[in-house]
Amino acid sequence: MPAYHSNYNSVDNVRVINGIPLLPLVTKTRGPAPYADPSMTYDAVDEALELFRPNSFFKNFEIKGPGDRLLIYIILYISQCLNKLKAATSQGEATKALYTLAVGQVTIPADASFPLHTMYPGVMDKAESDMLRQYLLQVRQEVAIRLVSLVYRDDQGQAAQYPSKWWLCFQKRHFMGKVMH
Image 1 (tube, rainbow, N blue to C red):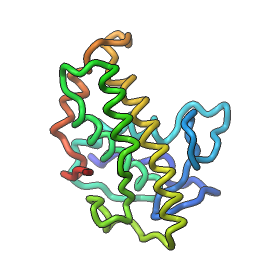
Image 2 (cartoon, rainbow, N blue to C red):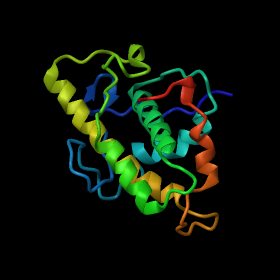
Image 3 (cartoon, rainbow, N blue to C red):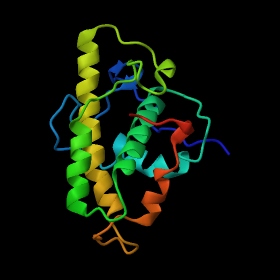
């Protein structure tokens, strides 16, 4: 069974830096992401949150386009976020911890410390590197906000006091066996 790929692999008229497309985001977080169409309800962050669990089981992943590179980055970041949560962490503590992680040091795929940096093309100059870092910072903040609302939901879709065990069980699973630090 093949891994699930991004729906954003064939998007045109989007700036691509370091193999990552700067896609519009449905967000209120400030950053360089293009403004999303008001009718847009599903974006790359939603896609990554939806595909995180099934893709976590795969050890191989064939990149079919720039959307897959963004998907890989977000999946690795979601894994890093889940590792920050504990079973007894309240929703407020989780929000603070994930926000702190989101605004911390942003590793871009061009950095040698990124686990899959060989799968990404290099950046042209420092301006592109800074633009990508700002975009990924915005993506990380949005992932942190949406992940908390997903993880702290019970089986009936209501807000829960503690994280879902069905999300926390993925703390030990790593996409392609890689971990982002």
